[in-house]
Length: 278
Image (cartoon, rainbow, N blue to C red; front, side, top):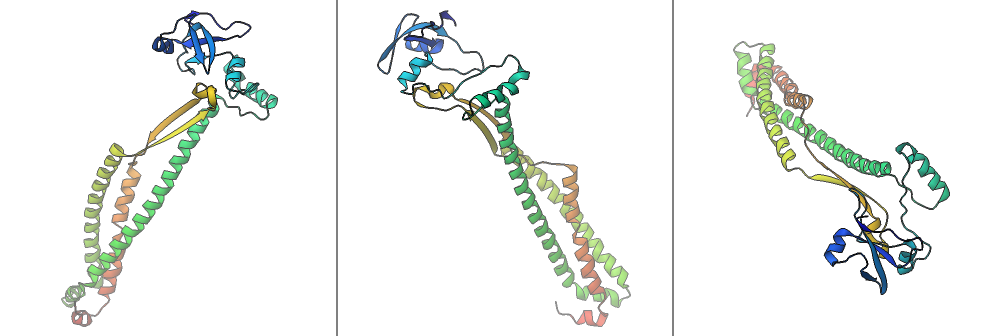
């Protein structure tokens, strides 16, 4: 209360008005206020505490039920426990006294928000994991095919090396060494591009918003009994040493394809290799 008084015990045609609404509508204590054709008298000006629910006009419950044509009904009842440790017990007692009511505490609202964010985060993580597996498999297969194709086109070259005295071990070592250099260079370039892409995602990534609303909106009861809590998280691309090492390891995986192709080419006789047509 900032001015005037609270409702009288009889709860007649009296109204409490928020200070901001009174200033906008130029209402003072004792001024008449007409709602749905019924005249009320402003008996006090009120200011809601920080973080509390607010409304422009407050009426006695019986008068509000009459105006809303919902006699004997209430859509929201606010209960304040004596201490925080009693909230759980009070909530259980209300559920027992009013079996059909939906009882929610501040802790329940926080759990709903956290649950929504966890579900969204898990979905995003699972989708990202599937995409990572698909892209990694495709990259490995592409690198292996390119390496095998490159070795296949050099059969005559490798046959010439065997003809001038290279052993099978030296030929395989040559191909594997080339694959190693290509894998290191390609891996470093890929890591650099991945870091840049992750920074871009962090800077311009979408956000997920979770919200939870308690109460309901019904006629004159309106938004004064609605409470909505929101929390927003931004999607980002995580970077870690494990991911970077994994990317470099996948880039070096073409060593297997290079070794397989080099071994197959080294097993050919020099004459057969030289007869191959590129």
